[in-house]
Length: 182
Image (tube, rainbow, N blue to C red):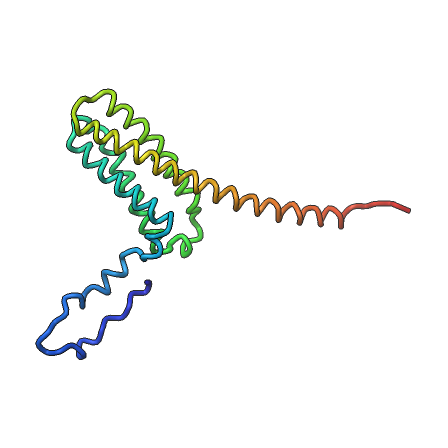
């Protein structure tokens, strides 16, 4: 996937036929890999991106346009994380704590979507506001599933780290103990 595949040799094409997909290899480098899109994380990020965009469009068309900033921001953040995960930037940029950033993004998105969806459904009577609220509830569920899965992965990772630290600490304690068992 990265670096992009080299462009085909233009001399091999027949003189009378030009291939319309000759310029696509450069653009294909920006598309996520099929394996990532079929993974659970890829599907969740696609759902987050799609629901955020639909919710944004509904808020733009509704009388509850005061709430359109949150779905727009979550759409852009989900798109950035989709791109970063698809291009495996989390492996390339080790200085950033990707799981914590993703966890905080999902938690805040779920809370904000839940609050603005309740307000949009309860306070506004037009159809676009109701639709935005319903899509916001769906987005809340998707973001909640994502942060639950991230939390489980981080907890499992920390448990493995704690067990390794405990065994190392136990060995060090046994070596440093002064037992006078004479």
